[in-house]
Length: 209
Image: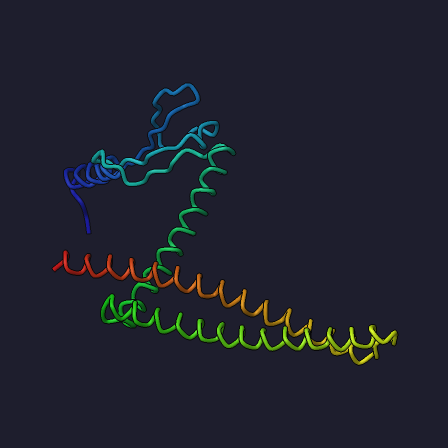
């Protein structure tokens, strides 16, 4: 196919115009804060940040300035805190869903709390009864020892052996009672938090309707 001179000129002009229209350039700040333009960023300014602009003057790419060591450290700390907060929120949301699915009312939470605490109180009561029995056993052993001493006789070894066993049982029961008391307080505190959270979630649900 042959082209006329006019067609060739039109073709050349079209190609040239296409090159101009599609031209893109960068805009950045140099080390002195001045604005610079070009098809390539100067090597000494590559860390200062830049934007890429198309032929229409529209920003098509934006590169932030490189962070200083202090800025990078602060950024990493912010990211770490944000990740922890995001995880905490996810865990709270999951717990809220379980809380709402488990209880149908605030009163139900109170009833379950009282039932659980009642079981602990019953366990403590039984343990204190066992403790009194062991303390009475310890009194009897001491009385037996004193009878031998009053007769100027050496108390037999079984008294000391039994006394050690009783003291060990007393220590274990007392520790159990203390642990149960702490468990009751933790349970009361936890149910208190759940109760307030449930009320808050229920109020939000009513407000959202």
